[in-house]
Image (cartoon, rainbow, N blue to C red; front, side, top):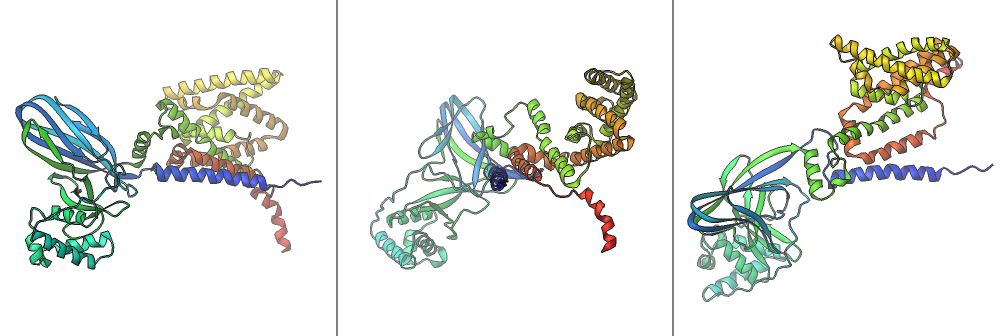
Length: 505
């Protein structure tokens, strides 16, 4: 007799469990779906306000807006500009918000609002092509001063990053020499840095950042320096030579493009206000997934009615796992194989105590009526059909009585599967006739115990969250059920048979 190897089975189960866990992990990391309920994520609302004076002619206002600032991702964008036409123009170099109006006069105010989500993995836009350094020229004596400063910085550095830091330090007020005094002024400091770095062959540009502080108004952009090290743009604080984008800094503009252009108006200025908000992480993840076109991987695209249905159906595997464990490993005897799961689903709908009262009432009355049907000597099909009709009458009667008494217990009975209850009554009645009342009590109480255990597991908020938002975890449940199907050892309830053997130890 050949024994079939179980290796393929265990490999298949392992692949099921691994696939479920892997997909759930990917959904959590890439789509941001939280693993627990109630998780909140911060969102920064930034409002750019543009003020200018209309000149009684057509106006065109263009504001530079960020595309993908490092450390942040854009969630939503919207403009508030009554009477103006609005559009977002994207080119290979930048993105701009543009307002237009045929005739503008007097003070004008335009608003542009953006929601940013902090994301450590966001590295910024890769839209721009690899930059080239632009050679610069100076006349004497500035040319000599530039050469001397660059020589000193080059001797103290070994890379574009270190050269930039040394050059910034050399141009600081506390370390200035005759050469730096000749070159540097408060107005041209940052532009001089950019020009000198380009002169050495290092592509450099300016950037404007916004320091994020909750509930701040009328904030201005802060200038920063950026260089390209051959692979990516690096940001430096031109005042301290500190490298990197601070955690609370949002780079609004990167490059030489103008921040604000106004045609048909004067006295223009732009200021920024900011507000830190918190939103549910699940809502945020759903919105981001829809924007990325990955919303089809979840149930949130379905109508609300169908979502509610799937929320309940996706709890069934949890109940099935509990029933399998209780019957196979623990050894609890139940009436029917998965009748406890259906009872647990009803308990989820009705809550535990009202559902328990309703179930016991229907089954008790049904057993009495089943005894009468048994005395009529009906065929099985006719008896079951009549029992189904009687169960419907029982539930309807309990619903009416409960409503008149001001309770909702009777109304919730309608959630129970009528046919399954009818079959349960039939099985218990036959069991009573063949095995006696004790066996009916054992299996009936076992069914209710397992149903309550399944209800407690299915009714938790974490179970509802994981089963609906990570449906691939049902592959793990399937793998565990298949593994339990291979169990052929003793059930825990059978160990009591060996209790007398302890006397011989």
